[in-house]
Length: 408
Image (cartoon, rainbow, N blue to C red; front, top):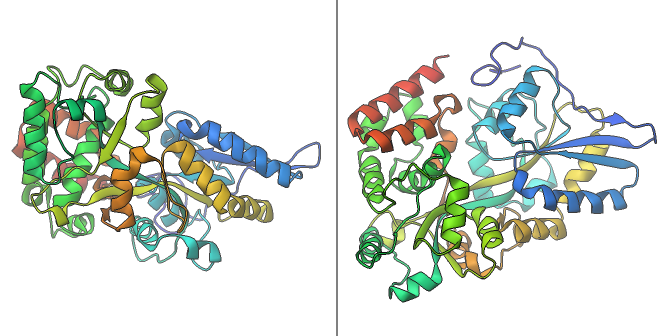
């Protein structure tokens, strides 16, 4: 076993072998567990599972999608109680599980041939060391977007900005007209990562994480423009940007209380629940004044994978193959307002057309924070920075925390 304990389970002994918890039920069916880290997609998964079970009456799939899923999964890993099937994000946790050789390698399967190469490359870069496998199938992708209220945009006479200066000008116009330019929800630290990733993803050096770990880059040297622009954006928020959380923001923005909302495509269904009649649009935050350089931050929101060791490999394979079929992939992205990593399966919703074009043109780059060591708790550090506004102290702390985590 490789470096299992780098970030996840340092106390586990080498050679530990985990197997999925699938079992044979009393009625003769094979029971599989599908673990999902997205409670928002429970309804979609329940529908897909129902269809799968109709086609495979000898297999029963139980969905488990708890809150704080990453923490739950880490706890179950320590207890040697991992599920057969996982639906998880392309994040550091995936890299840790893959590096620990707990997941099936899909490198030599035909299923991988259908995935857009850019997303395969993204998840491959998450696995540290010299490991060259691909231990999951990118399924649904996301977009780190600026969501706007079309009615407010029209009333202000604004068009979608394509440069940083145009974006700031739009914020100024809204402020001058008494409209809240941006509804921040920084009571929830994770929501600060939306603008952070948009700005950092376009400004940080290529392969920053790798260079940082090798001592060839640092936050102090490479992130000063990122912190400056974050503080600039903060000036266009609410009187108290730290008073409201994600749910507050969804309710307020859906009811027309701001021009822009920094969120991902995943927030669209929540906004529509609050106000089904609201007309929304999306665009990638323009971070520079060179239109061609401004890329959309997009990542693997959902990947389907399975354990390397499972008691029911055939049944697991059947479920994975079922999920990768166009019909299921299309249903997932339509119901979740997401994008598909599977070539030829496209999102057609008008709300997302502004970012869909960036994806179609491959004008995308990945979430920088997905490559930060998860143990450094970047969202909390960035929230603290936005409160204190001390750029030098913050950048120094980011460097220290990174180095502290990778030395563990």
